[in-house]
Image (cartoon, rainbow, N blue to C red):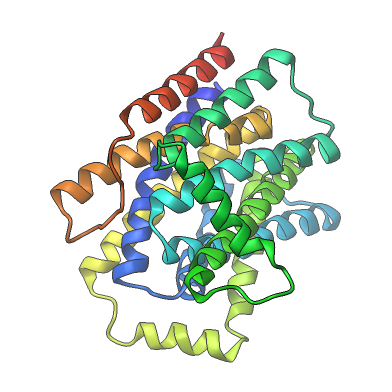
Length: 321
């Protein structure tokens, strides 16, 4: 059950990421501001409590609120990275790192271990996701990537050429968001192991809402949010924003439910499926409506991406059988 729920959640998430990229590029140019508007609606999750009324103890509440705060912190860096580059570049970086971080963290703190078959499926899914995501197919691209990595990270004590500052910021923000996504997933799995799913999920949203309120105490951030409010929101934009957030909430709940049922590392290793959905959506939108979304997709990668998609299918088959 968790496998099918995860795949459907990643399908919805792929569409949400494309919409988020559009909003960050065309409507809201501040990751803090966007995280604020996304997080402010988390308080409405308390409506779900009518299906399973539950009040945590003080110790349980601390864990729940901490998870919500970590998630909001993660969103800020995620939106920073998404604003800096194409969705088809950011999502693969984060998607490749999250399962690696979550595998290490879940093994260390939760004692989760994979069977040989599950571990092999994990590796196949991650490799498949990477093959789907990278743009270059020629071998010289490996050397070029190594040279760029050396320039960006090699001289830690010296200055970095200005040409590589954007790439450095992208890698830093993507890595930070990937690490804290993994921290959140492992922490929320720990919470679901001892608390009811609906109740603990809703109370963790309280942490996100508290974090949103804390944003308002930072003068520069508060001014940015207020400035955006001045004449920026039309009914049409509001409907689009609310629609995207409802879909994001649905995918988020489904993903959390899947985490409560299955292995954190395996669920995160399915990022390759999400990226395959993302590529198809971006390809369609950027081709049919280039004024809405511009993405640098590159060409000549059919064999590579087909191989990646095949590996993802193999990994999924190994998990399903």
